[in-house]
Image (cartoon, rainbow, N blue to C red; front, side):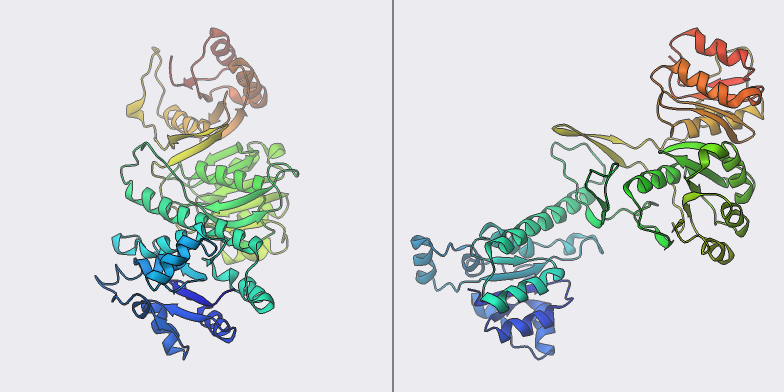
Length: 472
């Protein structure tokens, strides 16, 4: 039976209504600092924590709930005779419900926003979940109140659910702090990541796979996670994967750039003097493959782009912003998702992870931008002033193509992509076949060295003028 609740929250959403209803149910409310003040001002009867402990809050509020009379009241196992004898001996009052959420480190990182007492109370209550309810999310207040109104207590099923949520909450909180403090991004001996749920997805990569969508706290990089959806249905798992791939490509370029993505591979990418031209070139680089694709832009989406896309089928358009006229045109195709990214920020080296059975691989994201100074010409012929920018462009795109990857480029536009082949010569042949006569005078990027001369011979025979590859 719930007789006494300790309430100490940073997020005060719904706390007044919760406490009023708890009091109506005969529950005594104990509270701390700002929460107690808020409840007093709302005319709610509340007992201060220092009245419970007989010890004042001190050190600017750093020490207020770290006391045996708090944690003893939470941790005491009610059917353990020794525990209950200690409770009686030391005058400890039992606490049956702990309602706590933590200092908003995510909103304002810093030493003074690292909560100490809050996580301690949450963990104590979660450990003793069979006897104590613990609530860390205001969204759970109605569930708790409904049960208490029915039975004056919480079911074991509800207690277990709240316990799981509590440990996830403190784990997320500590991971967020640890990663913030790891400013050197060192590969520490122990590593944890915390993510906050954005939404449940209808399914994962395939309909039989469950999936959800999480955001990384404290990250301010340009991302799909923080994009504003202007219109369209909920993003699917595959939509998010493709949109992320599109964003990563267009972030490579300072010039206006556009990319068309299918199954996370670019089927067309282009740079130009203006974004409309870049988009048209990217789309028409492989209009057949672009059907049902995802469009990425690194400049504001124009009315002209919207008019073009109104005549074809695409899933998503993502851009820093959209002209009002463009939004009005897209409104006639409400299933097209429009993602407004806001001001794009250059990518900085961050970690990327890949889950494997029994572990996780962690590496720095490949954000290195190759320039002319990084190149070594190993042939007598040297790339001319027109070929060199195309080679650098081809290399930047090739980085985002599934290996074995070949990208053929001419005048700042991909004219063919060979992706995801087990042998390099197969990737070369696919790209050359797609390019046809357009390969003559073009340049080519390969994401790895050529193990045999067959690929280079085929490339030369097709009339490609220059190759960029990592060597080997």
